[in-house]
Amino acid sequence: MPSVLGLLEERERAARQRVEALQAELREAEAVWERFVIARETVGEVLAGSGGGRDAPPAVSADERPAQARTAVPGSVVPHWQEGLAPTVLAPDYQRIIDALADGSGMRGRQWTEASP
Image (cartoon, rainbow, N blue to C red; front, side, top):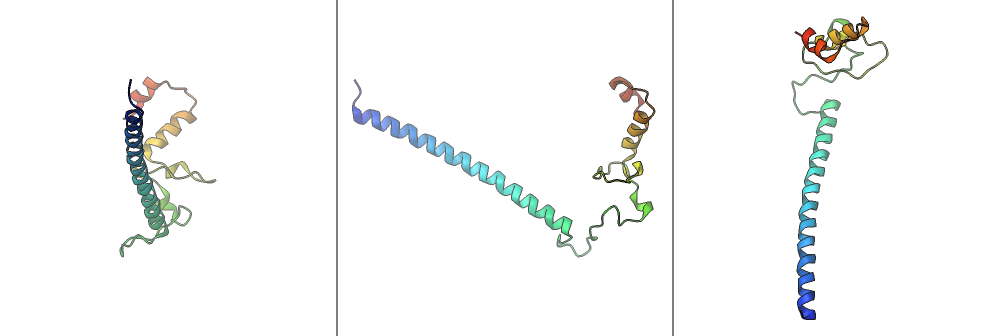
């Protein structure tokens, strides 16, 4: 039969191992949290135009750009939807998708892949 002190030491060891595992998990979670905080702050600085670069152009919304600059190029990011945005703000691949959906042909997946360049 095990002694009471032996049982207590065993439970103490198990509790210490659990605390160490939880502390390691906490450190990892704090590191992830810190990366998100830094990312959010960096994005906020960039969007505010205070990215630190002297030659960086100021942030300009789609409404402030000239009409000819509101057209997208291949690989561009899809803008947030706003009332009055024309399909030309989308990348050409997205414009083709909109055109295909607008004609009402009801393509299936295989047809989409065959139709794409």
